[in-house]
Length: 223
Image (cartoon, rainbow, N blue to C red):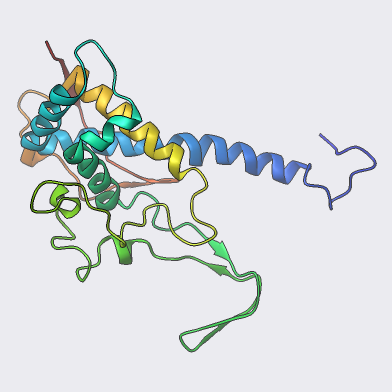
């Protein structure tokens, strides 16, 4: 719709901003969570011993007949580590563009105001100087020797700085509650005749996010 006559392009209410806000809600706010959960389920199928440890921790922490809350993560270090490792390993959005606000000099390069810059989050999330086994799915990246959860400065799936993901806190809460609820209810397995080694993690689909290839999943209801 056209903005009212007393609102020109200097107003924040116009079609371009409306479209951008809708894309933020649908793509950044929905697609990212859904795709991360797809990867999480695929990785639990690929590594059933990790899935079992998560379910055991859920059983020790969450009361029978209850659903987990975000506060429960403080008592679930392994589950918390698994979710962080999922986000590190998959590099869901490695290519989010930014725009320079002023003329900038960076490492000998001149970047004029208004130029598009794409930071490579993969260079951090898979950095061999920051992670012990960067190309392996390894929840121990976020655990100390006693099994306590530890934060890592190189964990930047939401980017960093003033323009990092505005929905980071909400995304973390959603991922934890949904992931725990799914593993509380189901055990995820490959379809009959398919082994864990057959599951493909190597060539994701490139859409708005890096999405796993479609693969059949058996969700077995837990007793």
